[in-house]
Image 1 (cartoon, rainbow, N blue to C red):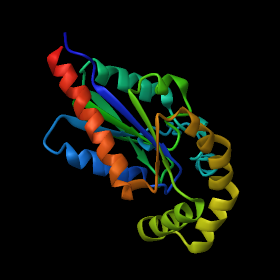
Image 2: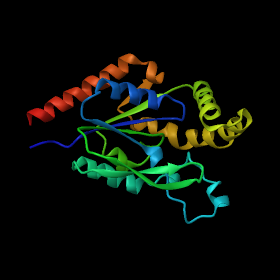
Image 3: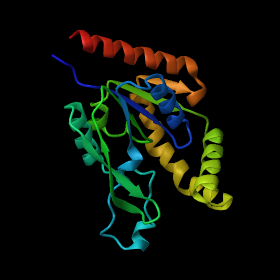
Image 4: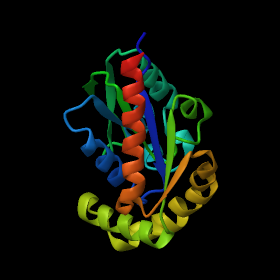
Length: 211
């Protein structure tokens, strides 16, 4: 009897290197049965709210996420059923009408800042990682990303970091480190930790093929 897919959770603060770790692991399985589900695709739909209310959204707070839908989709993938992954429109601050068709795979990487905060999500994971990176590196990376990719100013990025990102990290994200099976320092540059994760996933996949 075939076992369920392997679910690898990759958490960590904004700018910690989660996406780099995710890509590095995914690269090892290129051409194989693997997919990535990003938590930030699952921000709540806010189409019923006026724009002035949407603009107040704190995207670093657990309540910003529609974890009910995310959990429903993970469970469907665990049953080898396809899903329609939502798309978030950051300009309109609500969910887009577009969706992305996702076929089930043998390995599911779930990546996001708060995936370890919800016990229901943790219970779905076979391996839980936390990418642990110093705050100064995280703010620099976030600043570079927001200025280059989102057209933000330095002042706006710093103001948001001080008023929202940093306190939310300390209150909600950092405490989830205790739930991790493995803590990866230095993010995507830690090749030893990445190789260990790849080996572990390969071992589980081989065990599944035998059963």
